Length: 336
Image (tube, rainbow, N blue to C red):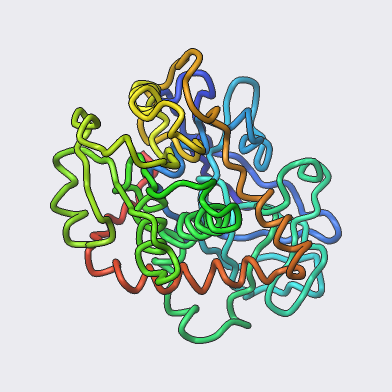
């Protein structure tokens, strides 16, 4: 039997982890075994853990009792198959556990993708059940595996937020405030807004002083504000706030500064997960969680299935090519 090495996290105490070795049970009819050879670990995965119960992220690869497997975006090879349409040797990209292996149950199979139709996933957000069969994709995409794991899921979210703002005419706002703009989803959104000649709204990024040089290199914000200097923002201009940080203090500060000029407040990430808390009643628009699958579903209904994600992937590749030379990838191979 094949042994799997898995990385588990205490769902209540995210800094508490364990390494678990298990024997993989024989595959059932219709299942495949994927050997995962690379995946990305970024602040995005912290957001998955923080919102694991709210969104359902813990449900994709269930663990025992109080433990969970934080999902990651990665690549894998099919090394065993009891599904004739997905043979051994297939190359996959998608939502995996922090582990050496994963068992999937392919359904809705096409040449370039399939959906994991395992029963425990049927009530979870469908966006994360899709797996790309990358050998059927264009060569330029096959050559971007590292960028795809690190960037594409975040930049796809960036595009969906961009589309959500455009779709709603920015709720009448004339500036977009982006918390934790140095995060990938943050600067991806900033770049997409900044690059669109049809967008006249100012892009204001909030970040730490240490990240200002990085943001200056990217040159995708009209203004960069350091945390603690929020009072320098022009509060007379109606704004929307896109929060990648999850920092309750920052959210409260911006809402109280802008007041009724805060036209929309979208919670997206939790890069500052230890600064979460109750903001109390805030002036302006009520902060609401931005749920990317909902925007996809809306556009699928308007444009046809798959078109929104195709646009998101194209935009992701464009931003990834812009910024990849600014990034240093650290490779870690030992589970400990």
